[in-house]
Amino acid sequence: MSETDYAFKIAMVGSFAVGKTSLVRRHVEGIFDEKYQSTIGVKVDRKVMEHGERKITLVLWDLAGEDRFHRLETSYLRGAAGYLLVADGTRPNTLEVAEELDRRAQEALPGRPRRLLVNKLDLKDRWATPWEELEKKASAIAPLHVTSAKTGEGVEEAFGDLTDDVLDALG
Image (cartoon, rainbow, N blue to C red; front, side, top):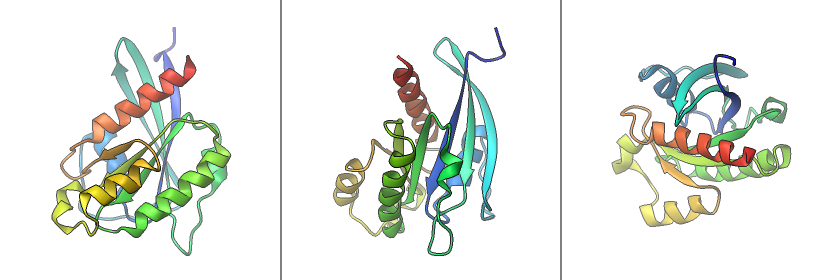
């Protein structure tokens, strides 16, 4: 048998500066870096992990953030087994962007598992939207995880739950 039992492409999508790259770095390398570097195009990382009795490789496609100057290249989604939508809890408009991205991603990847990560839990005191409203809006988009790339809170659970969803989709 190969090095891993399964390899899955997972796309990271969201608005500009919501923490997609930081979440990937936290998951893959276990680190957080305060310096912000905008992703241009796509950055690909790999993480081999034990998942139950299986060894799985996640091939993480960190896509450049969507904003008024840059649109999601849906061609980058091709072949993805699932995707993580990322929004920034301190910027309510990023949840609206995530909702639109989800609609477009579902057109490109109908029925693929997805999760919504509302990131920057470490800055929760700066979140503009009350928790109940945020939870209601988010749950209408996709299963919700609250994360902090900085502290690591919720990150492994989000990637693990999406991996479970992808495996379940295989049957």
